[in-house]
Image (cartoon, rainbow, N blue to C red; front, side):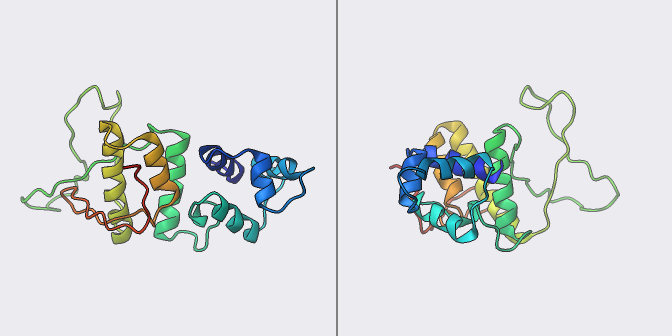
Length: 189
């Protein structure tokens, strides 16, 4: 999702008009909505300080708009989160379970799955990321997607969790137990 599309999605999620956001940014009333429309359409790209101000006004983590360290764990997760917004069915997360038998005894890199209606007609390709911090983040994301699917959290709560992540992040162990030690209250209840 492009920067302007992200701004628009979060602005509408927060219930603000383009004019309201523009006024909060300090633009004159006669062109406040035009300036925000230009940002959202991609006609203009806001400067970094403007993007940080937009994130404050919209009450979201600025990393939704500004990448400080490309390729860091947080940047990887933001990329995944926004791809998930573009297509909610693009990511199917699951926790791998350790098999106590021999590992790496041959070159077979296949992971077996039981065919069901939930899997596509052609076998998908899996990915394992050998980056501890990303694995921890993915484990929590897996739990949040399961909570969304089961109805334990709403679409709004799920989106709130993503746009304020990593402040909304908490430790989730391999068994899916959530320590709920986040610094930002993202759940409605």
